[in-house]
Structure formats: structure tokens, C-alpha cells
Image (cartoon, rainbow over all chains, first blue to last red; front, top):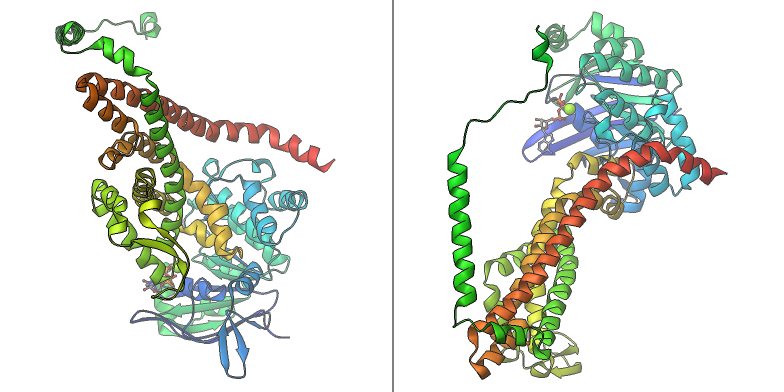
Length: 253
Length: 299
Ligand SMILES: Nc1ncnc2c1ncn2[C@@H]1O[C@H](COP(=O)(O)OP(=O)(O)OP(=O)(O)O)[C@@H](O)[C@H]1O
Ligand SMILES: [Mg+2]
């Protein structure tokens, strides 16, 4: 079976700074791939390329076999139109470090926004589904709260529900717990563990080594725009082969 | 802890003689000013009373209101458009929008009004047809088209659009960039991101300065008097050129401007209050009532 996400030879530069220097990475279906690495190594950029919040300069990214951002023609690639791009994005969930809930909408309204506006679902149907999702992330009783009335951990769980409401094929998490107080990290990780158990394909940029070890199927260590080392999480964390990996793991403890 | 410490605080302030002296002085100045104004034989209050509801004055008042409301409404639409252009990814649109606000905020409104009024000096005729000197389908004499009212409307609207663009842009920029990305990540097309996420939240920032713009617009309309715009001030001037009651007619006009701006201020106060209250009560109401609403919808 083709992998859910296939990243091949991806390069990306911001001006003169090359941030991704030829990344090859597969995310198998129903698997959890965690990405670790020092600040500025290009982890967020890589994730953002997958749903085309950033464009790439060379290489290919495929999700479920479909090329992201372009169509292939005999005479080369053509940039995808907005409608098609939106269709691709709708199938890829993304959870941000800073939650980014819509501030003028309640938790429930945040969750129904995608299904109603993007997928054209009826409001009633979307609300029913949203209530189930909020229940699933343990926030059934917070449905009518505004983001400002929720703790960081609660906001992040609503953000996860908002993404799930689109029934995505894959979920991207960019340091979902880094902005949280230590005591709130666990509740978000618990939701993510549940998702992983249910077979959601996930790509997770994280500093939570415990999560990477227990919940991850595959671990990627990035540094300076390249994948330095990847493999079974336990193996990479306990017996890193590369000096750079050892140095990084030594620093984060 | 003794029982007395639990009693409510009921302490006396130290004496504040300064406050009393200031109040007495200010009161004295006010009374003295009022006295000199009322008994001053050079201020013809009888004429003021006589002219306040003169039909010409009322017609001028109508023109002033029409100018202010129309140029404000169209100016807001223009401002939203230009602000969206300014924030677009298209460099040509950005440049055009930048040029617009740069030019119209950078030149005096008075000059712009006189310019629009004299448009015929540059373009004797205006019409539709093939550009770059091709044949014209329809054509009008500019002078017939650009009445003082139209020139005033053009000047005020285009000028207002430039200021509103900045206000709207600040409002849009106030909405966290992350929310826009979150909406994009959900697969929302650009237009929906703007309509569903950005503009509703930008409103909170946009509304108060827009109220101020309107209040100042009510007075700014008086500038069209330089092109004989038939507004309140123009009419007042026409009358006093006739009867030489300069001060009385300026008072008449000023009273009307004060009435307009007072009404607008009160309106602004209520809109803002309702808006803020909306934020709170909407939240409370939704918290309690949304559940039954949803249930009712389902049944
Ligand atoms: N929009 C941008 N414009 C210019 N440079 C950028 C942009 N986004 C990221 N960069 C640069 O690209 C590099 C990689 O950034 P990225 O955010 O991908 O790192 P990261 O691995 O996610 O780091 P962190 O752990 O701090 O989140 C950094 O040097 C950053 O400054
Ligand atoms: Mg990052």
C-alpha cells in the first residue's frame, strides 16, 4: 500500500536561507510519526509544506497518492487552483502550537465552522457531529464557551475537535503542547493517544519524548534542514547512531 | 482582631480647599461668559431665532446631511475594498491601494474639492468608449455632470475612503494571523476566510473610529462651501452676504452642527454600548439557551 504521506526530495528556502535541504519521509497509513529536533531545524516548515501553508521549491509531496499543490501534465507541473487546493487541505487536519481558535465563536461553533462552510453540511448535522467530537475530547460541557473562557489545554482540545470534524485522512500536529502549562500537557496528549489508538495517521512535531516513545511508531530527528536519523522511537531515543542525535537528546534530557 | 476592625470603612477625607476654589472660579467664568453673550447688543439673538428654521437654512441642512451620510456610506465600502487590496498578495493591487491612500491622505481636502469642481479644465467631456483615444459610445459635458453637489460628494467620498481604508486595515490586521492560517488549513477559500473569520472580528476595532469619522464628517461637509455646495454653511453665507448678519447666521449654522454632532455622538455611544453589551449578553445567553435552541431545531 502507498504511504498516507510521501515526502520526497523536498527543498524549501526562505530568501537565501535553505530551511529544508532534501527531505525524504514516508508516513505509513494508521501510523504515528514524531518529528524532533532543535529549534530552527525546519520541523514546522516541513509540516506546513504538507498542507501547503508553505510552498516548496523542489521535490514532491503526496497525500494518499495525490500530489499536493500541483497537477502533473505531460509538459510539467501546474499550480493547483484555489478550489482544488482547498479540497486537498480539507482532508489534512492541522493543530497549531498556539491553538488559533476563532475568537468570536464558541467551542461548538469553532467545530462546526469547517463542515458547514467548507463541506456544505447542514448546521443541524454539523452540530450533532460537533457534540460527539467535543464529548470525545472531554469537553461536552464547554460547548458554549468562548475560547477566552477556556484554559489552554481545553482550547487545544477544541482545536483538535475542529480538525477532526473535517474527517481528515491525516492529522498534522505542530508542537501541540509547547504553549501549555505543564499540568495541562497530559490532557492534550491523552486525546492524541486515543486518536493514535483509533488508527488516525498522524505527523507530530513535539518535544514530548515520552509521547514519541510510547505513542509513536516512527521517530524522525531533524537538524539544520535534513533528517539526521530516523527509525523505531525506542531505538533512536535509547541508542542513537548519530553524534548530532546524541548531542540533542543529551541537551533535552 | 478587635470587633471594630470588621466595621465598614467610614473615614473622612482631609479637607480639599483647592477643589472648592477651582469650582468657584470656573463657575464665575461660565456665568460671566453667559452674561456677556446674552446681553451683548452685537449678537442679534432675535435674528438667530428668526433664521434658525428658515426654509433655506433647512434646505442647506438637508444637503449637509445627505453629503455626510452618502460619502460616509460609500467611503466605508471604498475603504473595505482598498484595505483588502492593500492586504492582498497581488503586488499591483497593493501598489494601487497604497498610491490611493498616499495621495488622498497626503493632499488637503480643500484642494481636492476645488480640483473635482474644476474637473472640466482637464477633461472637458467624460464618457464610455474605447480607451486610449478610441471612439466614444456615450459622452457628457463634464461641466454639466459635475455640479457643486457632485463635486462635493466625489471629494468627500474619495477622501473618506482613504481614511476608512486605514481604519479597516488596522482592524483586519488586529485579527491574529494564526486564525487566518487555521481557517486556510480547514480548506476555507480566501473569501470565506475574510467573511467568516477576519471581518467579524475586525469590526470590534473598526466601529469606534468609524463613529469618530462620521462625527467629523458632519462638520467637514462645510468645506464644500468653497465650491458653493448649497450645504448649511454655504446657505448661511449667502444669507449673511445679503443681510450682513454674519455672526447671527454663523450662530444659526453652528447650532445645527451641534445638534447633528450631538445626535451622532449619542448614537455612537449607544452603538458601542450595545456592541459591548452584545459581547457579554450574547455569551451569557448562548451559554444558557443554545442547548434548547439546538434541540428545538432538531425536533
Ligand atoms: N516565513 C518565514 N520567513 C523567513 N524565514 C522563516 C519563515 N518561517 C521560518 N523561517 C526560518 O526557517 C527556519 C526553520 O524554521 P521552523 O519554524 O521550520 O523551525 P522549527 O524546527 O519548527 O523550530 P522551532 O522548534 O523553534 O519551532 C528558521 O531559521 C526560521 O527562522
Ligand atoms: Mg516550529
